[in-house]
Length: 146
Image 1: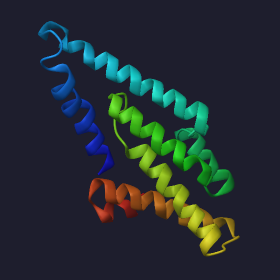
Image 2: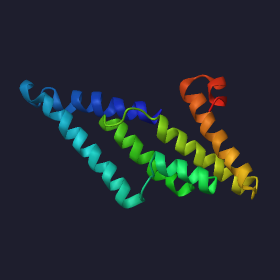
Image 3: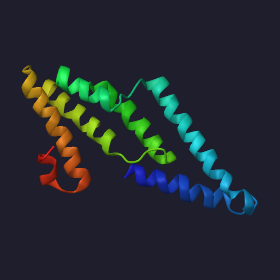
Image 4: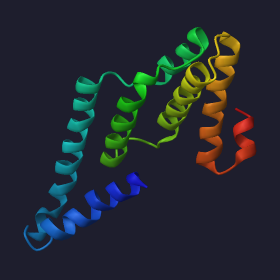
């Protein structure tokens, strides 16, 4: 997956190729704040350039009031969460994954199935969110409890 490739590249390959042997051993620790600082800057640039990805209260309010999560929040959420996870600043990808799959479920409901009933769109959005949880934790039945 992209996440594991980037983690391996940033925290294994780059230090092995450019840090070890080129820096003095007692300065190796400086790579950690430098890499994390660059990735945190990329999170900020993602928000500035691509727009606000939204957070959990925003996601919940959109599902309750409008029955779907806008699809234009998906790309900023993908990049902001990826850079945050790579920097070590996130506890896990569960919340972004749930929001992204919920937005895709609502999008499919409204655009492909042409649903206009709020309750049906909300159910499809929640099904996307439940599917994300079930897939992430590897327990398909657990997603139905969502």
